[in-house]
Image (cartoon, rainbow, N blue to C red; front, side, top):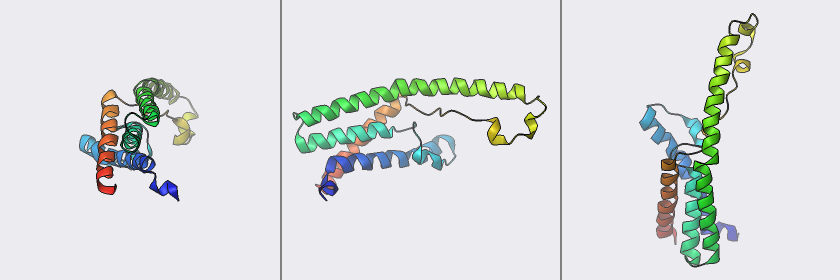
Length: 158
């Protein structure tokens, strides 16, 4: 039952859920449309990956000290995760946009084919996930979310 007292673990999990949840109202403000699928999707504002790893590092820093080896490990882990979110994963999302456009164009050509109209809609279009990575601002606010949420939890719980 010691896992229930692991503050860095629970701060990180809380940051993930908070960041995923807050994507819905942020998206509503931006688009005037409620999209509950954002609760379980990757990408978007704020980055839940960044929130989780910064919450972890902040909590480890609070419990173990900023000069501890475990804080160093968590800080480097956070940096690598946030760099990856804006780099490789973001580029994969950009490529997915281009591929989806190619598929859409291809489907437009096939619309004229004789049997195409008889196929079910789900067979006609299979899109790749475009929201894989994050813009730098999304990573920044995800990281800030993790830090501030952990400091608040530390103040309230410890």
